[in-house]
Image (cartoon, rainbow, N blue to C red; front, side):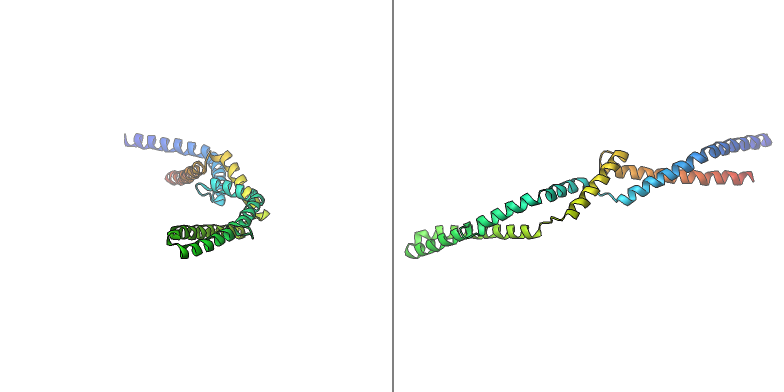
Length: 193
């Protein structure tokens, strides 16, 4: 009975070993393929929401000329010789003179001072925006290349970056499983020796 149990155990181990041997070639091929996929995904280093950020950057880079023209027009309207700032300064000066003659004009002068401060802030914003605007063709090219990579990865691995990252986690789990399969095969081989 003990010999029979040992015999059955040996047959079961041999069957498992033969089954694992048949699957070894498939496992090695699958491991290579998964490693390639993981390497591709690791190299991409995707960040959730990155595609939306890049799409916005692309839109901004593509509209640079138009935005620069609009900013120049706004800056001229605010800061030009006949711009709003000079007009407000002139009106404020007159309102202050008026206020000196009649205290009832004080509220008007204060309102104009606030308006001048707001318009001056707008003018500073436009100047800052114009000087900080990135228009390099290289930047647009980099953004387009990155978006193209993300589109290709979406085609292969999922509809969104979050799906791709989830797929990457699944691949990492699968590679662990396949690598442990090899160690189980080695354990069984040792039992036969």
